[in-house]
Length: 220
Ligand SMILES: Nc1nc2c(c(=O)[nH]1)N[C@H]1C(S)=C(S)[C@@H](COP(=O)(O)O)O[C@H]1N2
Ligand SMILES: [Mo]
Image (cartoon, rainbow, N blue to C red; front, side, top):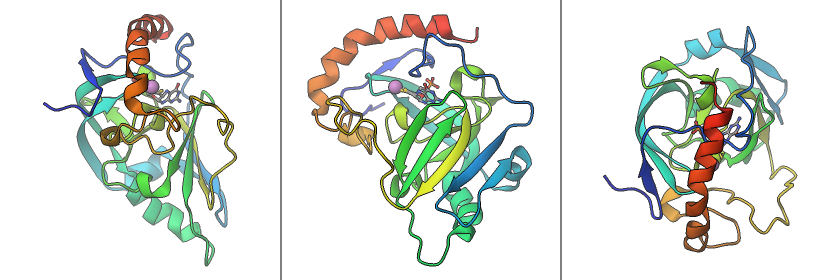
């Protein structure tokens, strides 16, 4: 098994979000995903709508920017590309060209993804992991999964997907340790300004404490 540069396999699949001390957000009784942004109208996507799209299975490793990789995960859900072609493209006004997609979770977490990256064939809106519905730790009710990019791209607990025609306002613009816009794991795009290999040792020291914190904020 080969891992991307600077990654190490860990046992299992730790919950590893950025609000680790907090439990996962509660799942609404009737969860919907709001689809909005530069579209002719805002629509909501129910579980039933998602169920009508073709299902896809994806076997993949999951890579956190901190350097751990969970290996051999099996995701199920719908391909983001299918969702985009069938539910979003029909809502584009003539001449509108989407460049960025913002994924937002029920906990307020956001990731900004280039449309080009989101349309890759291994990008899913996932509702099952390893044969079971997603649990709170890993993104219930549904999450984005883009295994060719670092984990920070893969927003859990999806509540809204917004489509933009240019880069949305960026709170991290002047942040020296801002995450990389694309975060492609095989190119080791961990950070925007710092080369991946430089930050590896810093992260490595953090994995253990983060994991401990994560266990405390976890559902179980
Ligand atoms: N909603 C939400 N999604 C999130 C996060 C988060 O804190 N909240 N953390 C991100 C980060 S930094 C990583 S590494 C992965 C971790 O996924 P996991 O908790 O399923 O291991 O989720 C990403 N998606
Ligand atoms: Mo992460």
